[in-house]
Image (cartoon, rainbow, N blue to C red; front, side):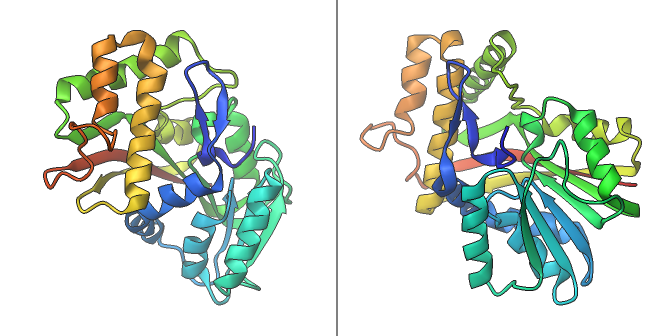
Length: 284
């Protein structure tokens, strides 16, 4: 499994599909305000040494680097050379040379010595992890005593899209949950990982574990990136859950996001979108 987790999605056949860098960029831009708040809430300090594990194209790496410069250091690790190449170009344009180092590697075997980092950040990857304890053991190993581990993921059970009737949204979310439970993809994908993060850190033996939930909402007028993200997310739920939806439910749901349909909602002045993300932290 690539550490570039956020770009991976599961289709109706239980196969992984890589949506690539552009999808990640749209996703990031549509949530950048909330992501900046999450990074602020980490209370990183200038001079901190941070591991961004599963860094992908360096989007979180950039936000973290802003907080630890000029004396700090951020190390990004990913197993996808294409994403690392993009991250290198992007971060050099943002003038983070001397602050950021990028390495190819895997989060099951982190390529660093013990006690190397003040903070380990693991964003949007636990949904794809097959051995949670092994991954956390590696993070604990490379974190200095008194340092922190911060894990962030989405919680797919919370989805609000107005003016879609709530009963339809709940049916679609439930259908996707049933499909993932009854026909689990290989390797696994957990659309409901956010609710588990705090418990995973407690079980791993971390101290002073806390968790914060962030309601990520998007309001009109929507940017093109937000429209891409919302419609892609909605299509994923419908595609996965289709075996457990009636034909009417499936078609009605898809019509809300079809720009050529009279039911299209993304340009409505009444539109409201909300989903939940969770950030959990604990001390080594």
